[in-house]
Amino acid sequence: MLRNLHIKNLALIREVDVDFNPGLNILTGETGAGKSIIIDSIGMALGGKPVRRLIRDDAPSGLVELVFEVSNPETEAALAAMDIAAEDGVILISRKMQGNRSTIRINGETRTAADARAVGSLLLDIHGQSEHQKLLRPDHQLDLIDSYGREEIREALLKVRESYKVYAELKKKLGSGEMSEEERNRRMSFLEFEIEDIESAGLKEGEDEELEALYRKMKNARRIVTAVNEAHTLTGYEEGAGDEIGRAVKELDSVSEYDEEIAGLLNTLSEIDDLLNDFNREVAAYADSLEFEESAFAETEERLDLINRLKAKYGRTISDILMAKEEKEEELSALRDYEEERIRLKKKFARAEEALGEASRGLSVLRKRYAEEFSRKVVDQLRELNFAKADFAVHFEETAGYTANGCDAVSFMIATNPGEPRRELSKVVSGGELSRIMLGIKTIFAADDKTETLIFDEVDTGISGRTAQMVAEKMSAIARDRQVLAITHLPQIAAMADTHYAITKELSDSSAITKIEALSEEESVLELARLIGGEKITENTLKSSREMKEMCRQMKKNVL
Image (cartoon, rainbow, N blue to C red):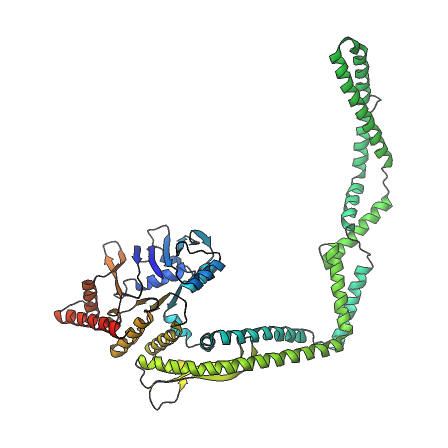
């Protein structure tokens, strides 16, 4: 349940903090007071596209915060699967927009917009004009039938989608593998050339690294020889460091018998002399081993050029090149057995198509059975929403080919007056009728819907009088088991509120500010009177308001 909404520095709102209650929460206000920003703000907090132009010009950033109470164990489990824990049964979602940046936090942790949308789908469902328009789309109509069939259809649909995946992959292979004999021969010749190109090189794993090290050494051979010989001379015993250390050893040796400390120094220097002598011999041996042959250098350079050429064509490493060779050999083998492979592939495709057809037909049977039940319930709902003689059915057609949803295309068909033939929903209903149909369908799903909060925006479009009263009763019935928020301009719906909020706009010389306040009983009566009679409130409109509220109170007590 949505417990609290906090909006700061968005559009006409400087700062709003409002608590919502269980049951039917009704929001009313004059046109232009800022009702739409309430819905837009909630949508943005739940991962919708940020509308940066809504940030007030006199503010550095805009903020929306939603506080939800979660009590449904299934919802808690679904949130836990997303690594979101309801702390003391509370989920806090916030979105801050500043410049070109937008930050979403869930329980204080930064999350993505996709995460917010996933969480939002569990906690809250918004039904506005866009939802009504979705009802006209055949794909959404099919989704509604599938949702109504619940687990039985879900399992059958999963089977269809698994079968379709196999079918689509085989169909793609058959299409991409189709080639003439000339094309096949040309491809085989090219593969044979590439395989021979790699095989003739006789590559070995790690060979490139060894060659590169050898190449660096050969390329710098002269510098190496010069440096090694110079090191040998400088550490040698002919005018080098060895000669100097040898003289130093003799000097200390001549006086070591007179002082034990000198004897210790002599031992240290003697060790240095031995180490230097060993080093000098080793560097001499290394210098003698150095050989530079132009032919060996040329061979190494040529081998490296060959390997680098193969890398440019087949892969970044020798392992990649050898793997490419294996893949080409497999393709060549398949092309040599082309006809046999095509026959095997066609047989597999035929079996997959048959399995998909069987799964799709089974799904279609289920859909048609549930569609009949769904249609009867829609008719019942429409009659409760002042479509006294409405007739509704789901029309099925078979698609031209198989899809991941099977082979069904559906159309919602309706006749709103007696004696009229059923026609497609999109060609018959007005905006107000569409809103009522959507409300009726939502009522059908409400019993199994785990979402604890429903928001209705513009559900009262194009209705009045008795129809408005019936819509109010329907919304109140839905609100018995869950929280409902509804924005309306109709007194019949507003009178049914369990909690009534007024959205007002205060004007000053420099700005306009939107406020939301929960109304007391008497304030609600005054707001209803405004909805009934406009700005001029009379004793008659006040009396009508009180009567309307009392009638709704009795109806909820005795009927709902």
